[in-house]
Image (cartoon, rainbow, N blue to C red; front, side, top):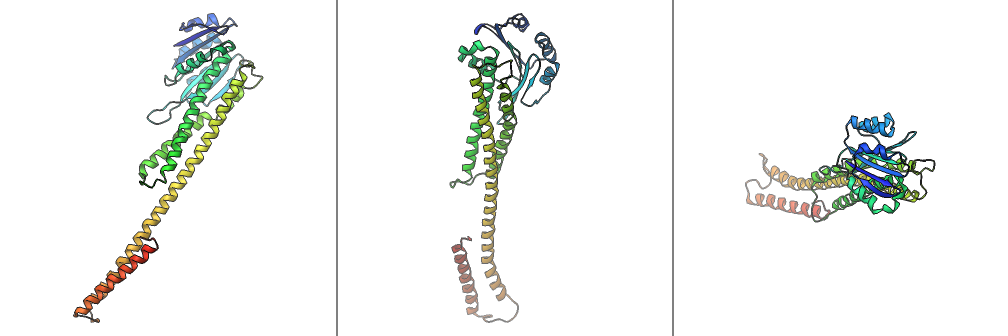
Length: 323
């Protein structure tokens, strides 16, 4: 359980029981934050009654896999965002629901995999802005969420570029199965990131609207615009990675087709070389009279003819790069 009380921009108390929140939110000069991790429906009901939260917003918290969004109610905002978490190289986003009132911020985490401590450290690093209350607290949270997604998209881009370069390595032929598996995992992680990052444009864009009175603050507006800029960059970068992965897949298919043609070309060449001595020996192996039958020169003629023809075909195919 994490709780904080800011009074007129100064951190006055933290770690107090959630039951005391109602004693502080009545003062307009206070800004209260508390965090819940995997709360029970009963806990949410109590919080909803104390802060006057809408029942539909509380219902959304209990529903899994909500889309990143902002819902506007009479006395509060309900925001859903996703943090970045990996489980055995698989992106497993962590849902974070946020209730925003005039002087209270409530974060409800799906699990402890979302590092709320890093959010607190960002608040402490920018404590000069704490006087802007809930607008300041919400910015720190969104800034961490978007920066986490930005760092992840950078990492995915580096992996995609490394994968692209590995297709043309001359030192070693890449393991086909391992390469396919890596492409699949990278494509899945990129798709999951796209699902949680693309709607963030709408989330932050809604908060930037001037008619949004709950967190409207001219001083904090540039900070939210900076977050919005990062959101746009993440969205554009994700689309770029998707295009890159599509090109990698097409290149891989082209390489496989080219290698198959090379293999077939070599097999055809060797088959042609083998067919010549087979035809000659078959001719001389007929059970009918033929020139040189029973004579030594017949044997040497067939042997020389086989050798010369095979060598001639080999040199011709090698010159054409068929072998």
